[in-house]
Amino acid sequence: MNLSCVWKLAVCAPAAFVVANAGAQQSATDAYPARPVMMVLPFAPGGSPDFAARKLAEKLTQSMGRQFLVDFKPGGGTGLATGFVARSAPDGYTLLYVTNSFTVLPAVTSKNLPYDPNRDFEALVLLSKQPSFLLVNPALPIRNLKEYIAYARAKPEAINFGMVGTGGGNHLSAAWLHNLMGIKVTFVPYKGSTLLPLVGGELQASAATVSAALSFVKSGKLRAIANTDSVRSPALPDVPTVAEQGVAGFEFAPWQGWLAPAGIAPAIAHKLELEFIAALKSPDLLETMEKTGTVPIGGSGAQFKKLLSAELVRWKKVAQDYNITTDE
Image 1 (tube, rainbow, N blue to C red):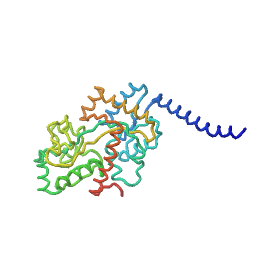
Image 2 (image 1 turned 60 degrees about the vertical axis):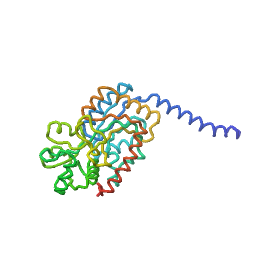
Image 3 (image 1 turned 90 degrees about the horizontal axis):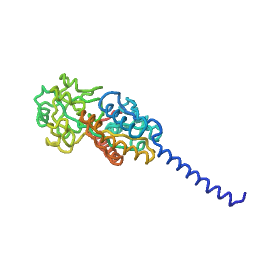
Image 4 (image 1 turned 30 degrees about the vertical axis):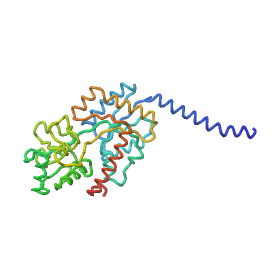
């Protein structure tokens, strides 16, 4: 074989491999999904994330022609499921449901986090948000934020404020809000929900999303005195926002979205983005979300990525400002 033939083989063989590989990738993209897709939730079954995810899985199964299956992996403050998906193949067959804990956890945990939120994921869709409410036991003479502030100033640290664990979103947001209001309360961490202890008088105040708090407020067992979102909730329209009651610079509305492992083919990510957004327009899914006070958003992957970046910066600053950490 002469040198010119050798040269042609050396140059053309890699080029042929690139073309063939690109063709295979395009074929896989066109055929997606070719098998069932796993939708991983970092929570135990039950509750509004479960119900909404199952309904969403039904819609995606119908529209994309393959099964979308909800898989539950609770534990580690959502870190178990998140780490699992981060290590999964970026082929579009393993997706992750995330809430604001995805950006809160890195802010308070600097050691042994099994994923990098910036490096290991691709944002697909900003699904929805849930307003959060500041709640008090109705035995207290408190009906609005002004009266809450006055009560707390008259009795410093007398209010036992319940929170789910240490270093979660409700802990960081509550520390931030109470600092802005210039009052001190006693934060009491619980392993589970704080609402029953609040109903029983063990606690005087707490905060919860509208899906968790709605039945308690409507039955009169708890009183909602402020909505922490920037706008009022259709579920409890008579409850004014924190900003409406004179406390500026604060906003907290836990959000929900879907991610894929980093490296997913852009065409598959875009296909999923469009399918998620289309599913959000279906009347029965909207009805399911409305029942839990969830507000659909349907933001694009690019919009969700921008939110994630801003949230990571925000919660890191809050954790540092108030010296909140889960590291030992």
